[in-house]
Length: 340
Ligand code: NAD
Ligand code: ZN
Ligand code: ZN
Image (cartoon, rainbow, N blue to C red):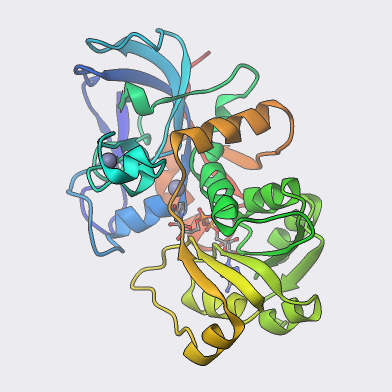
């Protein structure tokens, strides 16, 4: 099977031929149909974050495909069934976080495409209990971006406790943001979308954004304040200055939800304003298996639209450049050629 491998941080990925991996107890082998390119994969390949993956590794945590072989003891999945393999590759199931519905905070978790090989490959292994069945009627190409971009923004809105009649600012209308706009609308909010490219602002409008703010030309905080300020701001742009800009547009009691992970990122949070205005800064990391099941259900029910462009895996390095230049409409999904 072919896989795109990171051999050195910051170097182009290398396409390699590898033997098909054998599923161990509790694992399945998945023949991938589609695999999304999340900006996180670029951070992983560049070694951007304090904890780096062990080289060499195969990135990718939006892999969707068909179960090809069951490891020992796997009884709840069937060969031929479509599954998605998310960032949360496994968690311990026993700790305080796992037991309280916060498996995404488990300290024993292993992350797909970071702590173990991911979905930039024709085949991959997955822990069966964390491979998410994809409902009938949801294509592999739609399911792929939902597996990280979808579940992460769906969860961020839950974390913010968004309610109808609130104003939600979505900062960055990329892979994550184009779904965040839709979940905020589903929650009943008025949505202000912020970006720095005309295409993304137009896409945000098409997907239901009520207000668009061009951060190149407009003062983001002042624009949001014209509408009373945001109850929640979802920070998805890979740029600390964008976090500060949207934070300045919160209304009293508003919440900044940090989701994007720029390298060496930190922001200034003014103490006086935060105290007097009673605002919060919250981090939000992907979502649980239950959150992903809900994201797939919404999509199967026709409530969301996934915008993607397909590419061959061999084009992986050009695709990384396209994402970094902001030229992708929303998400790139590798077409891995497996037939349903
Ligand atoms: P993306 O590149 O597809 O989207 C980023 C968007 O931000 C683009 O539309 C870009 O035009 C826009 N942008 C750039 N500068 C801006 C600015 N100053 N103001 C407003 N918008 C601006 O990336 P993505 O795949 O959506 O990922 C976004 C970030 O979220 C990455 O850092 C990724 O690692 C992170 N992420 C976090 C989680 C989590 O669980 N917390 C999960 C997935 C991804
Ligand atoms: Zn745990
Ligand atoms: Zn991701």
